[in-house]
Length: 317
Image (cartoon, rainbow, N blue to C red; front, top):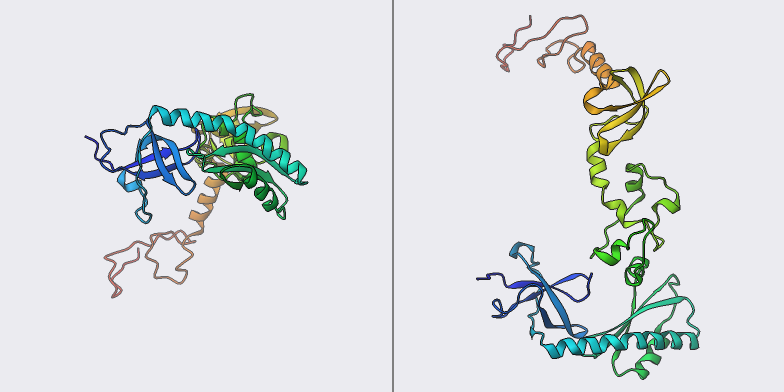
């Protein structure tokens, strides 16, 4: 028997997951079913993705309950409104042209399940663009409440689809449900060329795939020397020319020859030399005697601790 009372509902194929309560419908609603829910944009038809664990539910927000399961008529109505979305988008573009709105790109029109709301999604780089005259003109032509929704370039690429630089369908159009923050640091950590052609996606922003292996590179590089470091190898002392993090190896130049050396085969010479120098320097915290840390003095004497009493019971030998 299902004990969960919260389900995750998605309104678009790759959209965000929204939480709703179940009211005595635990046995009827299963993942994959379609349900009717009430949202701020009127009634919507969404698909149940999964039951939500209690510890993942935000207790600070009050959740709305689903109204009912969708029936065959509901599914037909959804298809009917979806068929009208393309005509609505064409009308929007024509009205924008007539009103001289040239700095906006209208990419999608979306009806709510009951047809009460019509949302036009657009993108623009003109922050001063006044879209209100267009919205008023569209409101007079449609029997629905018109909303103009500004979206970013990544959302535009997600809606339009197509293929990425890798030749495969865009990640945002196939499986990404949310966009993760991407930074130049991720490209640098993976040794990727910083030329725009290499790190920029079709949306004009940094590629989402830069996130995929970033953590693995960071973790792998923790135990590998940086470029330019001196290390000891089976071929002799050399300098690191390149780091191959996922292979757990480095490329080393030894007397003009280049070798690939794996982590278990080399020694970090500079680190070892620094440790030897520190050990030979002796204790730097207790130069005037009274040392109880066990380090060697500069003259070769070693301080050992006795009972560690505060009354001066320590013995030096």
